[in-house]
Length: 220
Image (cartoon, rainbow, N blue to C red; front, side):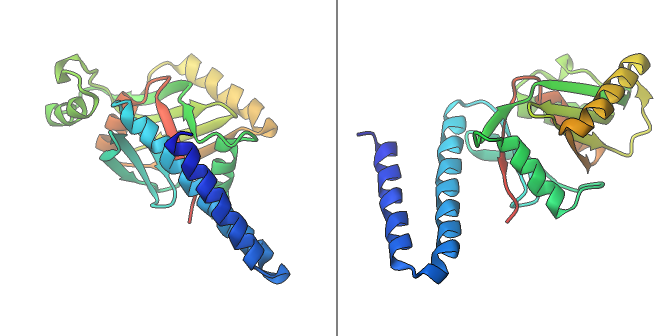
């Protein structure tokens, strides 16, 4: 039996003991507590696997109300989650759709779309981004994002907006993307809009290419 299986077994025994020790009037709260313990354990196991890959990953951490880029389990970039339109219920719905019926804790970014940007990124910002993504700053594009989206399966979209007065990168493509998303919205598409500084957006945009692993922590 592996160490992970042993821990799961021990956790299961503990949960069973918790439920047995509770009266009927406390069963519901005990089940909630037990589910929280299981969720915390599974999140820890997922993070350990991601950290062992020695590659950066995104943590949408609603519990701490921050977006984190992490490498080997350590936070190398952070940004407060400042929703433009969503409330607490919207955040919970985002988590629910991210996990889906199969309760997936990690999903890769499947698409990224830049709507508008401003040319020329300061060299100091490129240096910071280069250190995070382990790329020579000279090889990075210099567009400073004004608005872009990250997309995952299940119709999930994280839209980033900054105060940059940018120009549209491809007007026709932008129109087609937005039209497609409007058509999909009645079928379950969900968008979380977050504002951040141009420098923060620059880092997030450059790092999160399709395939970039993403995990999520629900609100407390």
